[in-house]
Length: 221
Image (cartoon, rainbow, N blue to C red; front, side, top):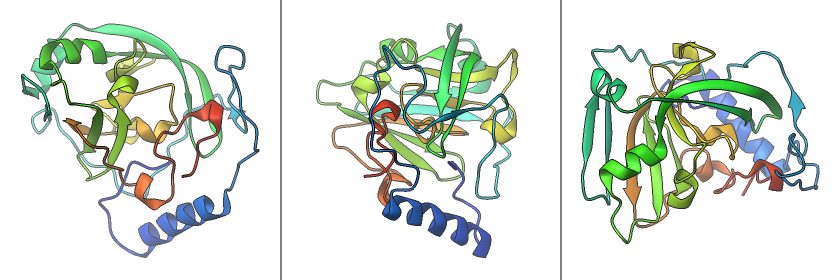
């Protein structure tokens, strides 16, 4: 699945049209469900050893000097962090599996970053905040529920397998939401916006599921 939307042209349009066709046709659906407590591999997925790079042909060049992460919206305390300020927040490591809607899964990924709960403690969402929209440097957006963000395995990450995230994989900073299909883990993260209402993102507006639970096979809406 791509997190790239800023480039223009026939190649980009063709790739988006193909993904929209997959949604209309229900491609890759098995019609089964799984249990994350019992089944490590969600329905219809296959294991890979590498980490595939899937995009629409554009990877924004977010230099350390250019980087800024805003956390705002329906919160009591807004944040606007330079890269060094983000790195100064409490850091932690996490190991998790990831599952892409294009049918691949990869086990035991080692990440380093800032826990979502650390961010929640600092910004203090307002009582009527219920949702979050992620905004990327390339214009991509995707949405999750606040309850999905408030999980121990959700991180804003800058390292994978002991090394800085590459540009191709969303560096310098991306989201990590391993319980959902990986299009929800926005690359090249620019802003975390807390919202009262639900705002479907780029792929959610193009036929993909609003929730994206791999074990329920929520590939398409």
